[in-house]
Figure 1 (cartoon, rainbow, N blue to C red):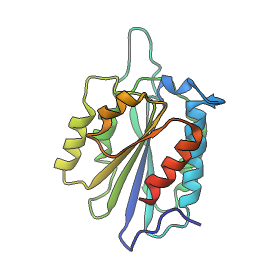
Figure 2 (tube, helix red, strand yellow):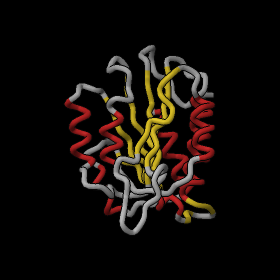
Figure 3 (cartoon, rainbow, N blue to C red):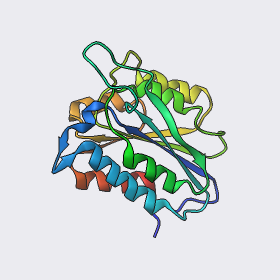
Figure 4 (cartoon, helix red, strand yellow):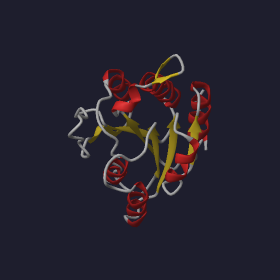
Length: 195
């Protein structure tokens, strides 16, 4: 059974996964990254076989370790581009990703505009993060640039353990879902996908 039932229009979902150092923090019985990986893998499985759907994966914070004197704000990369039946590729990549760097949310959003082949689809970004922008850019500005490029993108922000007062910082990007526990994260992902 799939979680979505969209019409014949093509849908593209770009998952942006936070693999910054803070994702190593404990969340419930395991780390935030372990929870995010498990739930993302389950979500990808549930989407298999959905007609007119393509997915892709961008990851940030996974290439350059953060140090007391350096953070790599360009550490964002499209790891699995859009394509038919690339669900296994996405699952395989997230299995081995290790969080180590900083949190360039704005640059990841900005770069994601070029991840979508065209605007002739329902283009959706699902950003899975536990933190705030750590670089010198502003996610709201990046969100405006996406719209200005004529790319029909609806970013959903799923926050793992973000303090509620910080969620307002993401409201300009798109609909914000707060996941305060593993169970609520599961419900949030289901709700985002089926929206």
